[in-house]
Structures are given as C-alpha cells and as structure tokens.
Image (cartoon, rainbow, N blue to C red; front, side, top):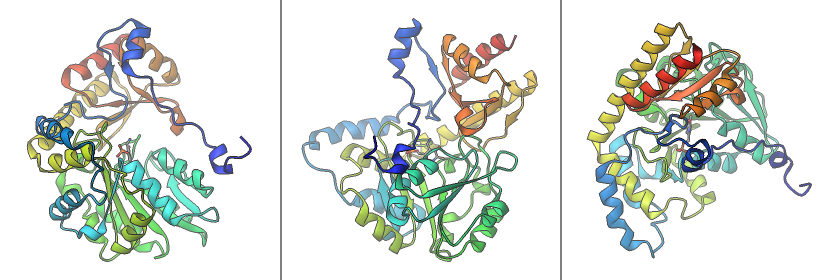
Length: 361
Ligand code: PMP
C-alpha cells in the first residue's frame, strides 16, 4: 500500500452495485426494478442493435483509433470541427484524460459540493488538491466558485445539469461565470444530461468555445442515447486542447462496437425523442407523487429525481431493495436525508411509488 501514489491511497473506492442477477438470487426476487444509475429505461434502440450485429464480423480487427466516422458525424451535427473532438470510453474517460493532460500535483481543482463523484476522484488520483465549494440551494454557487480561484487553480468542473441533484444553471449565469474565469483555468462543462434540458433553455456551450478557448464541454451516449453499457462519450474543446488530449489518450479507447453504436444512435432521432418524452412523463409521475405525499424533492433537469425522505434514508434504501426496487443512496454526496431515483418506464415508476408509499406508512 505504501507504494501507491498518495492521492490514490486516499481515494475511497467507487461504490458500484452488485450485478442485478446476483441481487435477485440473494433476495429471492425476480424482476427487480433498477432505478439506480440514471440509465435509459427504453433499452437499446433497434437500429443500434442491428448495426451492432453487422459489426461483429469485423471484431478481429482493431477499432479505428481516430474514430473517423463518429467524429465526422458529431462535427456535422453540432457544427464544430473534427479537430475539436476527443472521444472516450464514456465521458468519464474524457474527464479523466483531461485531468491527466492538464493537472499535476501542484494544482487545485474546483468543483461544487454535491457534484458528480468523478471530479474529486480524478483530481485526487493525480495528487492535485480538490476544492469543494459549498452548494447553494443544492446547486453550484458560481460567485463562491469564482472566489475560490487561486493562482494554483488549473481546472473547474461544472455539471449542468448536476448529478445527483439535477440542478441547472441558466445560460446567462454560466456565460457570466465563464467570462470571469482567468484564461489559464480550464472550465469543464459536463453536459451528460444535456439532451433532457428543454431546447429553449440549453446553453449554446459549443459556440462559446470560439470566444473562450479554456472552455471544454463533455457529453455522453450513456443517457438519452441509451448506450451506457457500451461506453461512449466525447469532449468538444479548442483544437489545441483536443490535440494535447489526443496525445495522452490510449489509441483504442473506444472499441468497434461503441464507435458503431454511437454513430447510429446519433442519427436515431426517433429513439432520442422517445427517450426525452418518456423521461418528461416519468418525471411528472414522480413529482406528482412527491406533491401528494408531501415529500420535498430537488427539481431536476436530468433523468432522475432526488427526494428528501428523512433521516432514515439509508434504512429506506435497504427496505426498498427488499421490495425489489433499487435506488441510489446519496449520503456519500453529503445528502444523507435523500434518495436518488432514476426515471423509469411508467410501470417501473409505479412500482417505486407503491413501495415507498407502503414503507412510509
Ligand atoms: N457526468 C455526469 C454528471 C454523470 O452523471 C455521469 C454518469 N453518471 C457521467 C458524467 C459519466 O457518464 P459516462 O461515463 O457513462 O459517459
């Protein structure tokens, strides 16, 4: 243990759940409803499934190390240059790659309290100092984050919407923030849940990169595109940032299946629209339930809702499991009174609602 980097030694392990089949076996329950990882409840799109089938024959070959077709499609769809794109094995991969490329153990990295766990993780693994700025109304306190910048600050993570709180920063607030960040500090705008944000409220973040070369934007195929198990994510940045990241990147960090799936998913508008519609309806279903029950919840722009269930949140999580529903405890995010529930299909949401109603008495 003494041989490990100090940062790594002090990391707490990422808390991943057991395989669902194993849980079902242990609990003696069939058809567990999993609303724990902000996955897409629709399952994989039929178009992607067919394309994957066609890709199998080529799997003895290495994948395209530059992701030529996927980058071309992304560039066209989002009106950016292919030289601005870095692909990754999920967006976690590009977030980590970015930190590895730009941050060292002399630096500080700023993120918000209750922000996505991967930010402190990648920061600490490098031996850099993570600065968690206290949240405001569960969300990012942008003025406080600006005030936390020191000469050592190299990077600031902003998740918009944030996980696990679902909080959202307006385009104006974000722009005003980025404008005030010194040019030698990278602003990482993590838009993993971007597609769930109503179009009128989305920030034109990719357009901002032309004026702010220190802005990088990460997105994923894991949520609205339904490819969490395949691992596909990307980052859009100034070409110089992408160039450096692509030097540090493992050449085959996206495999042939995930490349193909992402290409097809990007064109599959029907699936995307359905994902967004199912999410909006499910969100309403859960919000209505909270209102009926008099439960506080954090209004969410993502595909999940974080509900205040009180001091027995940990116990309720276990009891829900016994009822065949997996949600996510968020005590590790300094939210010990809340549980995060991912939006499922209407009947899955109903199963959760029934179980929680029963347990709350
Ligand atoms: N950012 C945020 C805010 C997330 O919630 C997640 C997924 N939980 C990710 C990034 C990473 O997703 P992936 O690695 O699957 O792209």
